Amino acid sequence: MSDERKDVKPEDTEAKEAAGPEGGASGSRGGGKSRFFPVLSVILGLLLAGVVAFYNIPAFHVLLHPHAGGDNAAMTADKYTCGMHPFIISDKPGNCPICGMTLTKIEGSAAPGPATATSSAPPATPSGGARKILFYRNPMNPQITSKTPAKDEMGMDYAPVYEDEAKGSGAGVDLPEGYATVQVGMERVQMAGIQSAPAVREAISPPVRAVGIVVPDERRVRRVQSKVEGWVEKLHTNFVGQMVTKGQPLLEIYSPDLVATQREYLLARAGVDRMKESPYEDAREMSSGLAQAARTRLNLFDVPESSIAELERTGKVQRTVTLNAPVSGYVTGKEVFEGTRVMPGMDLLTVTDLSSVWIEADLYEYEAQAVRVGQTATLETVADPGAKLKGRVAFIYPTFSPETRTLKVRFEFPNPGLRLKPQMYANVALDLHSVTGVVVPDSALIETGVRVIAFVDLGTGSFEPREVKVGVRGNGKAQILSGVKEGEKVAVGANFLLDSESKLRAALTKMTGGASAPPQSPPQPKPQTKPQPPPPPQPQGQGEHTGHGGAR
Image (cartoon, rainbow, N blue to C red; front, side, top):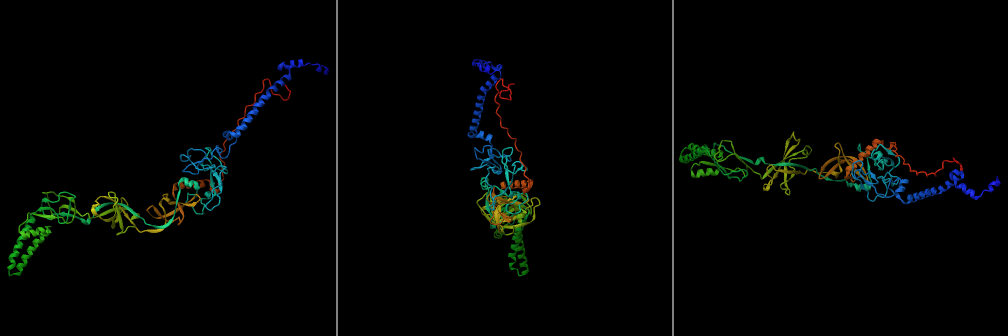
Protein backbone atom coordinates (compact mmCIF):
# COMPACT_ATOMS: atom_id res chain seq x y z
CA MET A 1 0.00 0.00 0.00
CA SER A 2 2.89 2.30 0.58
CA ASP A 3 3.95 1.75 -2.96
CA GLU A 4 0.53 2.72 -4.27
CA ARG A 5 0.49 6.01 -2.28
CA LYS A 6 3.86 6.94 -3.66
CA ASP A 7 2.61 6.42 -7.20
CA VAL A 8 -0.19 8.99 -6.84
CA LYS A 9 0.37 11.85 -9.28
CA PRO A 10 -0.18 15.57 -8.66
CA GLU A 11 -2.86 15.58 -11.30
CA ASP A 12 -4.94 13.17 -9.23
CA THR A 13 -4.69 15.42 -6.14
CA GLU A 14 -5.88 18.51 -8.02
CA ALA A 15 -8.79 16.53 -9.36
CA LYS A 16 -9.89 15.51 -5.90
CA GLU A 17 -9.76 19.10 -4.53
CA ALA A 18 -11.78 20.35 -7.46
CA ALA A 19 -14.47 17.81 -6.72
CA GLY A 20 -15.92 20.11 -3.96
CA PRO A 21 -17.92 18.93 -0.91
CA GLU A 22 -18.75 15.66 -2.49
CA GLY A 23 -15.08 15.01 -2.86
CA GLY A 24 -14.52 14.19 0.82
CA ALA A 25 -13.49 15.69 4.08
CA SER A 26 -10.31 17.24 2.74
CA GLY A 27 -12.44 19.54 0.52
CA SER A 28 -14.47 20.90 3.50
CA ARG A 29 -11.39 21.65 5.55
CA GLY A 30 -9.86 23.61 2.72
CA GLY A 31 -13.00 25.85 2.27
CA GLY A 32 -13.19 26.71 6.06
CA LYS A 33 -9.66 28.02 6.10
CA SER A 34 -10.37 30.34 3.20
CA ARG A 35 -13.24 32.13 5.19
CA PHE A 36 -11.66 32.29 8.69
CA PHE A 37 -9.07 34.97 8.02
CA PRO A 38 -11.48 37.65 6.65
CA VAL A 39 -13.80 37.29 9.70
CA LEU A 40 -10.86 37.57 12.07
CA SER A 41 -9.71 40.72 10.34
CA VAL A 42 -13.15 42.36 10.78
CA ILE A 43 -13.27 41.56 14.53
CA LEU A 44 -9.79 42.96 15.10
CA GLY A 45 -10.75 46.14 13.24
CA LEU A 46 -13.86 46.65 15.40
CA LEU A 47 -11.84 46.20 18.59
CA LEU A 48 -9.26 48.71 17.46
CA ALA A 49 -11.96 51.25 16.58
CA GLY A 50 -13.59 50.77 20.04
CA VAL A 51 -10.29 51.43 21.82
CA VAL A 52 -9.75 54.62 19.83
CA ALA A 53 -13.32 55.82 20.53
CA PHE A 54 -13.03 54.99 24.28
CA TYR A 55 -10.10 57.39 24.71
CA ASN A 56 -11.07 60.08 22.21
CA ILE A 57 -14.90 60.38 22.26
CA PRO A 58 -16.18 61.59 25.73
CA ALA A 59 -19.77 60.43 25.22
CA PHE A 60 -18.64 56.91 24.29
CA HIS A 61 -16.26 56.92 27.25
CA VAL A 62 -19.03 57.90 29.71
CA LEU A 63 -21.37 55.29 28.24
CA LEU A 64 -18.93 52.44 28.84
CA HIS A 65 -17.34 53.79 32.03
CA PRO A 66 -19.73 56.05 34.04
CA HIS A 67 -18.18 58.22 36.78
CA ALA A 68 -19.56 59.02 40.20
CA GLY A 69 -19.62 62.74 39.47
CA GLY A 70 -22.59 62.49 37.11
CA ASP A 71 -23.30 61.85 33.46
CA ASN A 72 -21.41 64.86 32.20
CA ALA A 73 -19.01 65.48 35.09
CA ALA A 74 -16.04 64.84 32.78
CA MET A 75 -17.19 67.52 30.36
CA THR A 76 -18.34 70.31 32.69
CA ALA A 77 -18.20 71.29 36.36
CA ASP A 78 -21.18 73.71 36.28
CA LYS A 79 -23.72 73.29 39.05
CA TYR A 80 -27.24 74.69 39.40
CA THR A 81 -29.19 75.34 42.59
CA CYS A 82 -32.53 76.74 43.77
CA GLY A 83 -32.64 80.14 45.48
CA MET A 84 -35.46 79.02 47.78
CA HIS A 85 -33.94 75.62 48.58
CA PRO A 86 -30.13 75.91 48.48
CA PHE A 87 -29.65 72.20 49.23
CA ILE A 88 -31.11 71.37 45.79
CA ILE A 89 -28.09 71.00 43.47
CA SER A 90 -28.20 69.70 39.91
CA ASP A 91 -25.63 69.09 37.20
CA LYS A 92 -27.86 70.56 34.51
CA PRO A 93 -30.32 73.48 34.25
CA GLY A 94 -33.98 72.93 34.97
CA ASN A 95 -36.65 73.63 37.58
CA CYS A 96 -36.67 73.03 41.32
CA PRO A 97 -38.63 69.85 42.11
CA ILE A 98 -40.05 71.43 45.29
CA CYS A 99 -41.16 74.96 44.34
CA GLY A 100 -40.82 74.88 40.56
CA MET A 101 -38.42 77.86 40.35
CA THR A 102 -35.79 77.94 37.63
CA LEU A 103 -32.44 76.68 38.87
CA THR A 104 -29.63 79.26 38.82
CA LYS A 105 -26.03 78.56 37.95
CA ILE A 106 -23.50 78.57 40.80
CA GLU A 107 -20.77 80.91 39.69
CA GLY A 108 -17.24 79.59 40.07
CA SER A 109 -18.33 76.03 40.82
CA ALA A 110 -15.43 73.68 40.20
CA ALA A 111 -16.64 70.47 41.78
CA PRO A 112 -19.78 68.38 41.80
CA GLY A 113 -22.47 68.81 44.43
CA PRO A 114 -22.14 67.99 48.10
CA ALA A 115 -23.58 64.51 47.69
CA THR A 116 -21.16 63.23 45.00
CA ALA A 117 -18.10 61.11 45.46
CA THR A 118 -15.84 63.98 44.34
CA SER A 119 -17.22 66.42 46.92
CA SER A 120 -14.77 68.51 48.89
CA ALA A 121 -14.38 68.15 52.63
CA PRO A 122 -17.43 68.97 54.75
CA PRO A 123 -17.67 72.62 55.95
CA ALA A 124 -16.26 73.48 59.32
CA THR A 125 -18.38 74.02 62.40
CA PRO A 126 -18.46 77.44 64.14
CA SER A 127 -15.90 76.12 66.61
CA GLY A 128 -13.45 75.41 63.77
CA GLY A 129 -13.66 71.59 63.52
CA ALA A 130 -14.82 69.64 60.51
CA ARG A 131 -18.48 68.67 60.46
CA LYS A 132 -19.24 64.96 60.46
CA ILE A 133 -21.65 63.60 57.86
CA LEU A 134 -23.98 60.98 59.30
CA PHE A 135 -25.79 59.95 56.12
CA TYR A 136 -27.33 61.30 52.94
CA ARG A 137 -31.02 61.81 52.31
CA ASN A 138 -33.23 61.96 49.26
CA PRO A 139 -34.14 65.63 48.54
CA MET A 140 -37.68 64.64 47.51
CA ASN A 141 -38.34 61.95 50.13
CA PRO A 142 -36.42 62.51 53.40
CA GLN A 143 -37.34 59.01 54.59
CA ILE A 144 -34.99 57.52 51.99
CA THR A 145 -31.39 57.74 53.16
CA SER A 146 -28.04 56.32 52.16
CA LYS A 147 -24.68 55.82 53.85
CA THR A 148 -22.85 56.89 50.71
CA PRO A 149 -23.45 59.66 48.17
CA ALA A 150 -26.13 58.76 45.67
CA LYS A 151 -28.64 60.15 43.18
CA ASP A 152 -32.39 59.82 42.99
CA GLU A 153 -34.52 58.82 40.03
CA MET A 154 -34.42 62.39 38.69
CA GLY A 155 -30.64 62.57 38.80
CA MET A 156 -30.51 64.88 41.82
CA ASP A 157 -27.78 64.48 44.43
CA TYR A 158 -28.65 63.26 47.89
CA ALA A 159 -28.23 66.01 50.53
CA PRO A 160 -25.81 65.36 53.39
CA VAL A 161 -27.08 65.31 56.98
CA TYR A 162 -24.49 66.47 59.47
CA GLU A 163 -24.15 65.39 63.07
CA ASP A 164 -24.90 68.84 64.51
CA GLU A 165 -28.05 69.08 62.38
CA ALA A 166 -29.31 65.72 63.62
CA LYS A 167 -28.78 66.78 67.22
CA GLY A 168 -30.62 70.04 66.53
CA SER A 169 -28.01 72.52 67.76
CA GLY A 170 -24.42 73.24 67.04
CA ALA A 171 -23.77 75.48 70.06
CA GLY A 172 -25.32 73.64 72.95
CA VAL A 173 -28.36 75.93 73.15
CA ASP A 174 -31.91 74.64 73.42
CA LEU A 175 -33.68 75.39 70.17
CA PRO A 176 -37.35 76.20 69.73
CA GLU A 177 -39.56 73.23 69.01
CA GLY A 178 -39.80 72.56 65.29
CA TYR A 179 -36.56 74.40 64.42
CA ALA A 180 -33.00 73.27 63.75
CA THR A 181 -29.66 74.95 63.16
CA VAL A 182 -29.08 75.83 59.51
CA GLN A 183 -25.69 75.43 57.82
CA VAL A 184 -25.71 76.94 54.33
CA GLY A 185 -22.11 78.05 53.76
CA MET A 186 -20.74 81.49 52.98
CA GLU A 187 -21.18 81.11 49.23
CA ARG A 188 -24.90 80.40 49.54
CA VAL A 189 -25.30 83.19 52.10
CA GLN A 190 -24.12 85.68 49.50
CA MET A 191 -26.14 84.06 46.73
CA ALA A 192 -29.39 84.10 48.75
CA GLY A 193 -28.86 87.69 49.95
CA ILE A 194 -28.86 86.83 53.66
CA GLN A 195 -27.74 89.85 55.69
CA SER A 196 -26.88 90.17 59.38
CA ALA A 197 -26.92 93.10 61.83
CA PRO A 198 -25.50 93.30 65.36
CA ALA A 199 -27.63 93.63 68.48
CA VAL A 200 -26.69 96.89 70.21
CA ARG A 201 -27.65 98.56 73.47
CA GLU A 202 -29.37 101.88 72.92
CA ALA A 203 -32.41 103.91 73.89
CA ILE A 204 -35.69 103.31 72.11
CA SER A 205 -39.00 105.12 72.50
CA PRO A 206 -42.38 103.59 71.61
CA PRO A 207 -44.10 106.12 69.36
CA VAL A 208 -47.88 106.25 69.37
CA ARG A 209 -49.45 107.20 66.07
CA ALA A 210 -53.14 107.65 65.41
CA VAL A 211 -55.49 109.25 62.93
CA GLY A 212 -57.74 111.92 64.40
CA ILE A 213 -60.52 114.24 63.27
CA VAL A 214 -60.43 118.00 63.71
CA VAL A 215 -63.39 119.28 65.73
CA PRO A 216 -64.11 122.79 67.08
CA ASP A 217 -63.19 123.61 70.63
CA GLU A 218 -66.53 123.38 72.39
CA ARG A 219 -65.49 126.12 74.80
CA ARG A 220 -65.22 128.56 71.88
CA VAL A 221 -68.64 127.92 70.33
CA ARG A 222 -71.32 130.59 70.97
CA ARG A 223 -74.97 130.48 69.98
CA VAL A 224 -76.87 133.74 69.39
CA GLN A 225 -80.42 133.39 70.76
CA SER A 226 -83.40 135.66 71.23
CA LYS A 227 -84.66 136.34 74.76
CA VAL A 228 -87.79 138.15 73.63
CA GLU A 229 -90.51 137.50 71.15
CA GLY A 230 -90.26 139.42 67.90
CA TRP A 231 -89.35 139.46 64.22
CA VAL A 232 -86.08 139.68 62.35
CA GLU A 233 -86.10 143.03 60.61
CA LYS A 234 -82.62 142.87 59.06
CA LEU A 235 -79.73 140.37 58.83
CA HIS A 236 -76.17 141.69 58.73
CA THR A 237 -74.80 138.12 58.47
CA ASN A 238 -76.36 136.41 55.48
CA PHE A 239 -74.45 133.11 54.98
CA VAL A 240 -72.63 130.35 56.83
CA GLY A 241 -68.85 130.64 56.94
CA GLN A 242 -68.78 134.42 57.15
CA MET A 243 -66.04 135.80 59.37
CA VAL A 244 -67.22 138.10 62.15
CA THR A 245 -65.43 139.96 64.93
CA LYS A 246 -66.51 140.50 68.49
CA GLY A 247 -69.07 143.35 68.73
CA GLN A 248 -69.96 143.28 65.03
CA PRO A 249 -73.74 143.65 64.33
CA LEU A 250 -75.39 140.35 63.42
CA LEU A 251 -79.12 141.15 63.08
CA GLU A 252 -81.87 143.57 64.08
CA ILE A 253 -85.01 142.45 65.93
CA TYR A 254 -88.34 144.23 66.35
CA SER A 255 -90.01 143.29 69.63
CA PRO A 256 -92.98 144.99 71.35
CA ASP A 257 -91.47 144.01 74.70
CA LEU A 258 -88.23 145.81 73.90
CA VAL A 259 -90.14 148.90 72.79
CA ALA A 260 -92.16 148.93 76.02
CA THR A 261 -89.03 148.43 78.12
CA GLN A 262 -87.33 151.36 76.40
CA ARG A 263 -90.33 153.57 77.13
CA GLU A 264 -90.36 152.53 80.77
CA TYR A 265 -86.69 153.38 81.03
CA LEU A 266 -87.26 156.87 79.58
CA LEU A 267 -90.16 157.52 81.96
CA ALA A 268 -88.08 156.34 84.91
CA ARG A 269 -85.25 158.69 83.93
CA ALA A 270 -87.74 161.57 83.70
CA GLY A 271 -89.05 160.76 87.18
CA VAL A 272 -85.53 160.82 88.53
CA ASP A 273 -85.05 164.28 87.11
CA ARG A 274 -88.29 165.51 88.72
CA MET A 275 -87.48 164.01 92.11
CA LYS A 276 -84.03 165.57 92.36
CA GLU A 277 -85.51 168.65 94.18
CA SER A 278 -87.88 166.63 96.37
CA PRO A 279 -87.24 166.99 100.10
CA TYR A 280 -88.15 163.34 100.60
CA GLU A 281 -85.18 161.09 100.30
CA ASP A 282 -87.33 157.98 100.02
CA ALA A 283 -89.07 159.38 96.95
CA ARG A 284 -85.72 160.17 95.32
CA GLU A 285 -84.40 156.68 95.99
CA MET A 286 -87.59 155.06 94.66
CA SER A 287 -87.47 156.93 91.38
CA SER A 288 -83.77 156.15 91.00
CA GLY A 289 -84.43 152.46 91.65
CA LEU A 290 -87.15 152.31 89.00
CA ALA A 291 -84.82 153.80 86.41
CA GLN A 292 -82.05 151.37 87.29
CA ALA A 293 -84.46 148.41 87.11
CA ALA A 294 -85.60 149.44 83.63
CA ARG A 295 -82.00 149.74 82.44
CA THR A 296 -81.11 146.35 83.88
CA ARG A 297 -84.03 144.82 82.05
CA LEU A 298 -82.67 146.16 78.77
CA ASN A 299 -79.29 144.59 79.55
CA LEU A 300 -80.92 141.26 80.27
CA PHE A 301 -82.65 141.42 76.88
CA ASP A 302 -79.13 141.64 75.33
CA VAL A 303 -79.62 145.21 74.20
CA PRO A 304 -76.12 146.51 73.46
CA GLU A 305 -74.66 149.25 75.61
CA SER A 306 -74.33 151.42 72.54
CA SER A 307 -78.08 151.20 71.93
CA ILE A 308 -78.83 152.11 75.56
CA ALA A 309 -76.44 155.07 75.39
CA GLU A 310 -78.14 156.22 72.21
CA LEU A 311 -81.52 155.92 73.92
CA GLU A 312 -80.33 158.01 76.86
CA ARG A 313 -78.80 160.65 74.56
CA THR A 314 -81.74 161.11 72.20
CA GLY A 315 -84.62 160.18 74.47
CA LYS A 316 -86.34 158.45 71.54
CA VAL A 317 -87.53 154.84 71.54
CA GLN A 318 -85.83 152.69 68.88
CA ARG A 319 -88.09 150.39 66.85
CA THR A 320 -85.50 147.62 66.49
CA VAL A 321 -82.68 146.41 68.63
CA THR A 322 -79.36 145.22 67.15
CA LEU A 323 -77.70 142.02 68.41
CA ASN A 324 -73.87 141.95 68.16
CA ALA A 325 -71.41 139.04 67.84
CA PRO A 326 -70.37 137.76 71.30
CA VAL A 327 -66.96 136.45 70.05
CA SER A 328 -64.78 136.61 66.98
CA GLY A 329 -65.01 133.65 64.67
CA TYR A 330 -66.90 132.10 61.81
CA VAL A 331 -70.62 131.73 61.36
CA THR A 332 -71.09 127.98 61.47
CA GLY A 333 -74.87 127.94 61.86
CA LYS A 334 -77.73 130.11 60.55
CA GLU A 335 -81.34 129.32 61.43
CA VAL A 336 -83.24 132.50 60.47
CA PHE A 337 -83.90 134.80 57.56
CA GLU A 338 -85.24 138.34 57.34
CA GLY A 339 -88.87 138.42 58.45
CA THR A 340 -88.61 135.26 60.51
CA ARG A 341 -90.57 135.32 63.75
CA VAL A 342 -88.42 134.43 66.71
CA MET A 343 -89.32 133.14 70.13
CA PRO A 344 -87.40 133.23 73.40
CA GLY A 345 -84.67 130.57 73.46
CA MET A 346 -84.59 130.11 69.70
CA ASP A 347 -81.14 129.64 68.08
CA LEU A 348 -80.56 132.40 65.55
CA LEU A 349 -76.84 132.11 64.63
CA THR A 350 -73.81 130.05 65.74
CA VAL A 351 -70.39 131.70 65.91
CA THR A 352 -67.30 129.48 66.39
CA ASP A 353 -63.81 130.60 67.30
CA LEU A 354 -61.37 128.36 65.35
CA SER A 355 -58.13 129.92 66.57
CA SER A 356 -57.67 126.76 68.65
CA VAL A 357 -59.15 123.35 67.81
CA TRP A 358 -59.40 119.85 69.19
CA ILE A 359 -58.19 116.59 67.62
CA GLU A 360 -60.09 113.50 68.68
CA ALA A 361 -58.16 110.28 68.02
CA ASP A 362 -58.78 106.62 68.89
CA LEU A 363 -55.96 104.67 70.52
CA TYR A 364 -55.72 100.94 71.09
CA GLU A 365 -55.60 99.51 74.58
CA TYR A 366 -51.85 98.86 74.64
CA GLU A 367 -51.18 102.39 73.35
CA ALA A 368 -53.55 104.21 75.69
CA GLN A 369 -51.89 102.81 78.81
CA ALA A 370 -48.81 105.00 78.26
CA VAL A 371 -50.67 108.24 77.44
CA ARG A 372 -50.93 110.97 80.08
CA VAL A 373 -52.61 114.39 80.13
CA GLY A 374 -50.16 117.14 79.25
CA GLN A 375 -47.85 115.03 77.01
CA THR A 376 -46.52 116.76 73.92
CA ALA A 377 -47.95 115.71 70.56
CA THR A 378 -47.05 116.44 66.94
CA LEU A 379 -49.61 116.84 64.18
CA GLU A 380 -49.38 116.48 60.40
CA THR A 381 -52.11 116.75 57.78
CA VAL A 382 -52.46 115.33 54.31
CA ALA A 383 -53.51 118.74 52.99
CA ASP A 384 -50.32 120.40 54.28
CA PRO A 385 -47.71 117.64 54.73
CA GLY A 386 -44.82 120.04 55.25
CA ALA A 387 -46.35 121.78 58.26
CA LYS A 388 -46.03 120.35 61.76
CA LEU A 389 -47.91 121.72 64.74
CA LYS A 390 -47.16 121.17 68.40
CA GLY A 391 -49.94 120.48 70.85
CA ARG A 392 -50.70 118.55 74.00
CA VAL A 393 -53.00 115.88 75.38
CA ALA A 394 -55.98 117.78 76.80
CA PHE A 395 -58.29 115.00 77.96
CA ILE A 396 -58.53 111.19 78.06
CA TYR A 397 -62.03 109.79 77.96
CA PRO A 398 -62.84 107.42 80.83
CA THR A 399 -64.51 104.63 78.81
CA PHE A 400 -63.62 102.42 75.84
CA SER A 401 -65.69 102.16 72.72
CA PRO A 402 -67.42 98.73 72.72
CA GLU A 403 -67.56 98.64 68.91
CA THR A 404 -63.93 99.46 68.07
CA ARG A 405 -62.28 98.54 71.40
CA THR A 406 -60.41 101.85 71.37
CA LEU A 407 -60.06 104.75 73.78
CA LYS A 408 -60.78 108.28 72.58
CA VAL A 409 -58.14 110.88 73.44
CA ARG A 410 -58.53 114.62 72.93
CA PHE A 411 -55.61 116.77 71.79
CA GLU A 412 -55.50 120.56 71.76
CA PHE A 413 -53.64 122.36 68.97
CA PRO A 414 -53.33 126.01 67.92
CA ASN A 415 -54.73 126.83 64.50
CA PRO A 416 -52.78 129.69 62.91
CA GLY A 417 -54.05 130.71 59.51
CA LEU A 418 -56.99 128.31 59.81
CA ARG A 419 -54.83 125.38 58.59
CA LEU A 420 -56.95 122.93 60.55
CA LYS A 421 -60.54 122.89 59.47
CA PRO A 422 -63.34 120.98 61.21
CA GLN A 423 -63.84 117.35 60.05
CA MET A 424 -60.36 117.22 58.51
CA TYR A 425 -58.23 114.10 59.06
CA ALA A 426 -54.90 114.58 60.84
CA ASN A 427 -52.04 112.30 61.87
CA VAL A 428 -51.07 112.63 65.52
CA ALA A 429 -47.81 111.27 66.96
CA LEU A 430 -46.93 111.06 70.65
CA ASP A 431 -43.33 110.92 71.87
CA LEU A 432 -43.44 108.78 75.00
CA HIS A 433 -40.66 108.05 77.46
CA SER A 434 -37.70 106.09 76.09
CA VAL A 435 -36.20 102.87 77.48
CA THR A 436 -32.67 101.47 77.16
CA GLY A 437 -31.93 97.84 76.27
CA VAL A 438 -30.68 95.41 73.62
CA VAL A 439 -32.12 96.56 70.31
CA VAL A 440 -32.24 94.76 66.94
CA PRO A 441 -33.87 95.71 63.63
CA ASP A 442 -37.54 94.83 63.50
CA SER A 443 -36.97 92.87 60.27
CA ALA A 444 -34.95 90.27 62.20
CA LEU A 445 -38.07 89.00 63.99
CA ILE A 446 -40.32 86.31 62.55
CA GLU A 447 -43.83 86.32 64.01
CA THR A 448 -45.33 82.83 64.20
CA GLY A 449 -48.50 83.83 66.01
CA VAL A 450 -47.46 82.06 69.22
CA ARG A 451 -43.84 83.12 69.58
CA VAL A 452 -41.17 85.31 67.99
CA ILE A 453 -38.12 83.71 66.34
CA ALA A 454 -34.78 85.30 65.45
CA PHE A 455 -31.84 83.63 63.66
CA VAL A 456 -28.44 84.30 65.24
CA ASP A 457 -25.46 84.33 62.88
CA LEU A 458 -22.84 81.93 64.30
CA GLY A 459 -20.37 82.56 61.49
CA THR A 460 -19.15 80.41 58.58
CA GLY A 461 -22.67 80.35 57.15
CA SER A 462 -24.33 78.80 60.22
CA PHE A 463 -27.53 80.25 61.72
CA GLU A 464 -29.18 79.24 64.97
CA PRO A 465 -32.91 79.87 65.63
CA ARG A 466 -33.83 81.32 69.01
CA GLU A 467 -37.10 82.24 70.65
CA VAL A 468 -36.99 85.86 71.85
CA LYS A 469 -39.17 88.09 73.99
CA VAL A 470 -39.85 91.52 72.54
CA GLY A 471 -40.37 94.68 74.56
CA VAL A 472 -40.80 98.17 73.15
CA ARG A 473 -40.95 98.67 69.39
CA GLY A 474 -40.50 101.84 67.43
CA ASN A 475 -38.83 103.44 64.40
CA GLY A 476 -38.12 100.07 62.74
CA LYS A 477 -36.39 98.63 65.82
CA ALA A 478 -37.38 96.31 68.66
CA GLN A 479 -36.16 95.84 72.21
CA ILE A 480 -35.12 92.25 73.03
CA LEU A 481 -35.79 91.23 76.61
CA SER A 482 -34.34 87.70 76.29
CA GLY A 483 -32.98 85.35 73.63
CA VAL A 484 -30.30 87.56 72.03
CA LYS A 485 -27.34 89.16 73.80
CA GLU A 486 -25.57 92.40 73.05
CA GLY A 487 -22.96 91.99 70.30
CA GLU A 488 -24.52 88.92 68.66
CA LYS A 489 -25.53 89.17 65.02
CA VAL A 490 -29.01 88.36 63.77
CA ALA A 491 -30.23 87.72 60.23
CA VAL A 492 -32.21 90.70 58.92
CA GLY A 493 -32.47 89.89 55.20
CA ALA A 494 -33.93 86.78 53.54
CA ASN A 495 -34.47 85.22 56.96
CA PHE A 496 -37.68 83.65 55.68
CA LEU A 497 -35.43 81.30 53.70
CA LEU A 498 -33.68 80.35 56.91
CA ASP A 499 -37.05 79.82 58.57
CA SER A 500 -38.24 77.37 55.92
CA GLU A 501 -34.90 75.54 55.81
CA SER A 502 -34.77 75.28 59.61
CA LYS A 503 -38.25 73.80 59.78
CA LEU A 504 -37.41 71.37 56.98
CA ARG A 505 -34.28 70.15 58.74
CA ALA A 506 -36.13 69.82 62.04
CA ALA A 507 -38.83 67.75 60.33
CA LEU A 508 -36.14 65.59 58.73
CA THR A 509 -34.50 64.99 62.11
CA LYS A 510 -37.84 64.05 63.62
CA MET A 511 -38.71 61.69 60.77
CA THR A 512 -35.33 59.97 60.66
CA GLY A 513 -34.81 59.90 64.41
CA GLY A 514 -31.70 62.07 64.37
CA ALA A 515 -28.28 60.43 64.59
CA SER A 516 -29.77 57.04 65.44
CA ALA A 517 -31.71 56.78 62.20
CA PRO A 518 -30.67 53.67 60.29
CA PRO A 519 -29.75 54.68 56.77
CA GLN A 520 -31.85 53.09 54.11
CA SER A 521 -30.37 52.17 50.83
CA PRO A 522 -31.76 54.07 47.88
CA PRO A 523 -33.41 52.16 45.09
CA GLN A 524 -30.73 50.99 42.74
CA PRO A 525 -31.38 51.39 39.03
CA LYS A 526 -31.30 48.28 36.94
CA PRO A 527 -27.85 47.65 35.44
CA GLN A 528 -27.70 48.33 31.77
CA THR A 529 -26.40 45.31 29.83
CA LYS A 530 -23.67 46.03 27.42
CA PRO A 531 -24.80 45.28 23.86
CA GLN A 532 -23.03 42.18 22.50
CA PRO A 533 -21.86 42.17 18.90
CA PRO A 534 -23.59 39.60 16.70
CA PRO A 535 -21.67 36.33 16.20
CA PRO A 536 -19.75 36.04 12.98
CA PRO A 537 -21.60 34.20 10.24
CA GLN A 538 -20.63 30.61 9.79
CA PRO A 539 -19.47 29.48 6.39
CA GLN A 540 -22.03 27.72 4.33
CA GLY A 541 -21.90 23.97 4.47
CA GLN A 542 -19.99 23.97 7.78
CA GLY A 543 -21.82 22.55 10.78
CA GLU A 544 -20.90 21.89 14.34
CA HIS A 545 -17.79 19.77 14.72
CA THR A 546 -15.76 18.55 17.62
CA GLY A 547 -12.57 17.58 15.97
CA HIS A 548 -10.21 19.30 13.68
CA GLY A 549 -11.17 17.10 10.85
CA GLY A 550 -14.50 15.71 12.03
CA ALA A 551 -17.34 15.81 9.53
CA ARG A 552 -21.07 15.79 10.30
